[in-house]
Length: 455
Image 1 (cartoon, rainbow, N blue to C red):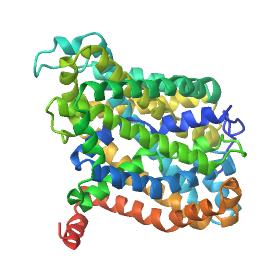
Image 2 (image 1 turned 45 degrees about the vertical axis):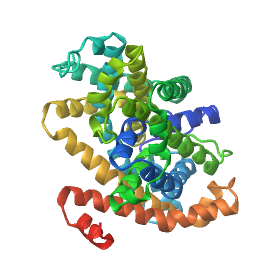
Image 3 (image 1 turned 120 degrees about the horizontal axis):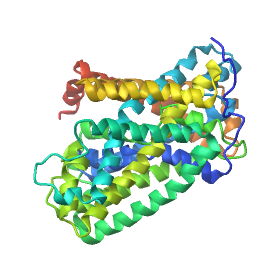
Image 4 (image 1 turned 90 degrees about the vertical axis):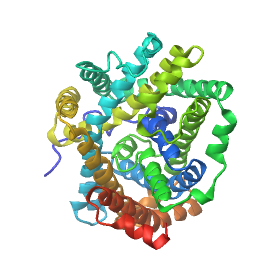
């Protein structure tokens, strides 16, 4: 199989500025995993002890993989599959390693089909809150625009917006959107967090997030923190390889990766400072789980001063995060189709968008299908792609090639990266992959670990 042409949009194009690159990559990393998954994972795993382990995992696992993925993309300037394939050939190895890029692309595209459904629901919640629907809702009553055919319509609207941005290309579409919406996102996040801390239980929230209770540490907490760090920074998705293909050679990959990982982590922490003061002031259990954002918070917003506005802003904030992440999920597949089938941008977007819509609509209609897709993509394909990518960057690509891409980094930084990408990251990601499989098929690994630790 050979590429029929280069990407129409352009591995030949470049980001117009570092700011544009950072807004795009931070937008790709910052998503519902920060505003939705991080708070409920923190709540279910005891608070500050989980946060501390999460921070360590970001620094020593996610950050090295992120550097490697961006370096691979910039080295060859192609799709994730094309970049890995050509770099393997340059290094004198089999093109088989391109499977790592293909797995990451497949994972991102599968996630898009279910992620867009959830994001559409979030957009509908923003609309309903601004319109005062939450304030008029009777306890335990179903929400209008959230049942029947409406979820399909909101999903279609969100996916259509994603397709529109990707179809407009790198600078007219993606750059224009992220450089506008990401500053708005940060401003709104800061404002809502200040509001929550001023009107909610700020002391309890800060203590819960930043005062570790090490007695609550367990293998389950450590593994949950590892998984959150892994998914939060968007490694294994092929997205950072794809965005890295547009990065100018003079840019420092290590420094920019630090900005990306740091900003993503900061957003997660600030999201906790936004949500937990509200949770504690409303006497809600912090381990309310995945239903927190949809089932619990609407009623809480209803009871707050200017709750309809606050709720609308909160859900619009989540919508922005979802949109900037969904763009790269579609783009990785579009660039591959352009590169290998020779399609132009618009036909590629329409083809892949139509397939994603069919899969998402089926997930809404067929019980258990969306959950199965999420499991395959999130628990198998993403960690597998990240594992193969880490091994490829650390062991297959010669040291001199990676040093050339990381020429702006100090020797100390490069050695730090090379040690963790070769030894630490593959082991940690392998554990995540195996335990994800165990959760589904019950091989007994969790019980074995619990027995070893006495928990």
